[in-house]
Image 1 (cartoon, rainbow, N blue to C red):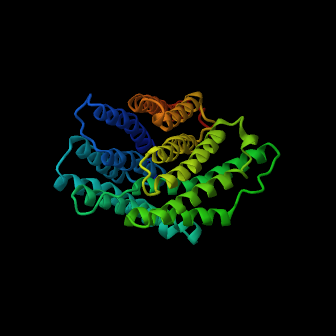
Image 2 (cartoon, helix red, strand yellow):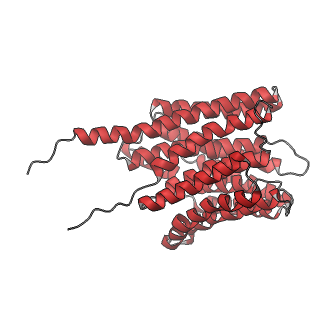
Image 3 (cartoon, helix red, strand yellow):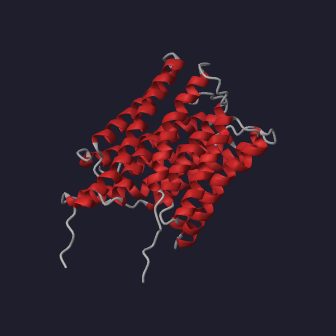
Amino acid sequence: MHRPSRAISGHRLFFAAASLYAALAVPLWVAGYAGILPMGWSPAIHAHEMIAGYALAVVGGFLMTRLTPVTLAATFLAWLAGRAVMLAGAPAVIALPVSLAYPILLFVIAGLPFLRASKSGHNAVFGPLIGAFILAEGLFWAAELGLLAPRPMPVGLLLVASLMLAMGGRVIPAATAGALRAQGGLLVQRVQPRIELVGGIGAAVALLSAVTGMLPLSGAAGALLAGASALARLARWRTMAVLQLPDLWSLHLGYLLLGFGWILAGVTMLPGWGDAAGWHLLAIAAMGIIIAVMMIRTTLQREAEPTRLPPAGVAAVVLLLVAALLRLAAGWLDPLDAMAGAAAAWTLAHLLVVGVLLSVPRRARRQARRKPEPET
């Protein structure tokens, strides 16, 4: 007797958990920063948790698609344990190995097979990028233990932004081309390999500068190049033709902010520039809008639902845009007020995303139960 495969996808668990953690972590950081809560998170730990706690969980949800229940439980518990030791302020002798467990598991389970399955260098870039999160984790702890000077540029954030630069550059034009084809139109400039290569080189140079802590001018030039390539590609994707499709215009908006975020981050990398606005715009674009919409679209696709963004998802995108604008305005407004407003918008947006992510499987199950049994 043939037994059905018990392989399951990690998207249901990891997407919802990541979004819920994103909704909680930012207001906790702001409350600690304002002295309301004795959190004691440094800016480095805040950045670490948004990368390792939020973004890397989302990466797991995307890539871990055929897991046994035991493997899914092990990876999720590794991620959860990493968050617990950071929230509890555990000593480094405990927190370091626990924090490294999930990035290592993610690379072994998803990164290595992805690397082996890639038939060309065009796709093989994703495997090393996933593995590089282990390096980012190691650099974070080396700085926390005083073994290295703190990195002047957030390596983990640049890794996420590089992933979104590459993934967005594949997903967005492909989805746009499909939508235009359904309307009887055509996206001529869907594939732009030369511009994509230029952007990839720019991102790699910025990452190399961030990892080594050297050559800030080269890092700045690389980030500017990555941002310019994103905007150049987006300009050819016929955004105006998909304004009636929320799931597509929101991805176009996220990629627009990603391009500007890379450029502003490049300015931030210049010596003597201390404003963190570039990093926050990059984070809200890459880890906010693009990731939120991709999570919802991926969940709808995997649950065999239409990919149209529901009203709650559109509201989440608008709130994330508000969060980005408030964070950028912190230099002109009261900084704490701007941070609190941005945190509130970010949190509400991710709570809406959690609601959407949880509602889709429930709706799919209800529809499956209503389906009449085939006649025999």
